Image 1: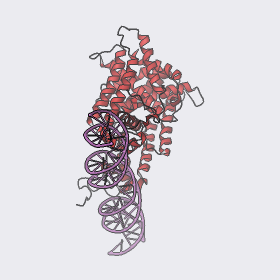
Image 2: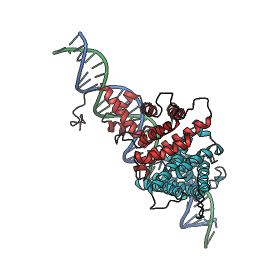
Image 3: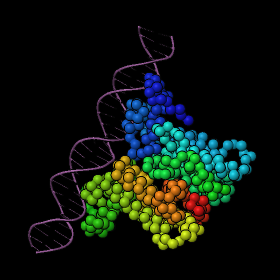
Image 4: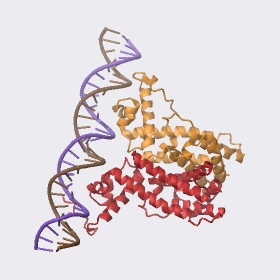
Length: 209
Length: 209
DNA sequence: CATGTAAGTAAGCATATGTTGACATAGCGT
DNA sequence: ACGCTATGTCAACATATGCTTACTTACATG
């Protein structure tokens, strides 16, 4: 997890860690919004207020930066998943579980991220064409779905039908993120947590209840 | 070396309409799969087996081709929507409606399109950055959601809550399309209509029932 | 202060990209 | 057969792109 610093306060001169973080942040923003191929290294460097060559210094290549962004997005998502399934394993309280999942998904979609903070789920939908990155992002998405299924009592080796339903639930979360990214898609794009949660509640209940 | 016309392709005779269609088809494939910015006009022309310059002849620019692709995707989607809501307005048979919607979404996701046939919903998620194209794709997505809501009895001016739920349903369809595009995302990516339909049945019931 | 090293900069290279304009040719009406 | 026009080809352009190389500057350490 990164702590993004105030870009003005980030004037700390010659701080390798800070510029690395700035590049990572800018990369996530652009890769999420425009995809890998449509993003240029100069855009990223400008956004980060940093020289272009430093991308290659710190991340070897554009591709390297992209993979680093994927890993970062995965870490963010890991946190979100932890919220869905607290590790107290004893909770067989189905009603509580579905409610918590619904709330988590709704909050993740409507969550007040800083305006410049990219939505991690969206980054995981972006492809660079590179096989390594492809496997990485696929594994993260699959892992997230398994975590959802796990919250409903599923474990590896169990019936695939449950996992399929969890993946459809993930699909809903993904679709909401995608459609909300399109400004003007009312009422979904402007829906608040209070409005979205009951909808998700019904959806989760239908899929994992 | 002169690249004369492919001798195997039997010298397609000069047919403006055919090459226009070939370019449109190739464009849809590439724009859908790689996005606007990551697709090059030379890729499209090669795929279509046609000279690059013809893109500009028939569509003015890469941007023009993209907009034409959006319109084409909208037309395809229009057909799919017609399947959801046959125009016989008298059907207040809620159970039949939800079942039909679920079947239509499932079929749209798992449908046996030719392998090279792009999924229209996915193209509508791609952005070129151009404002006109942006409005176009947004209107198409919104229209599709309204059609879903309409199948559940909603009409313009009614409670937004119903439209919101229809949009979440559309989000599910979108998310499924996106995740199925990622090869290896089992079991969703390999799910058949028979497997997916009951899942969608429950989802639609929960959202619009 | 001197100096070695980490951090940052500037310029350029090789290739890719969208677009254009001049040219070629097939096919049709006359 | 002749030429006209729609259709298609080719080469070039201006710029964009990812990356490397040689250079400069700040800072910690002696």
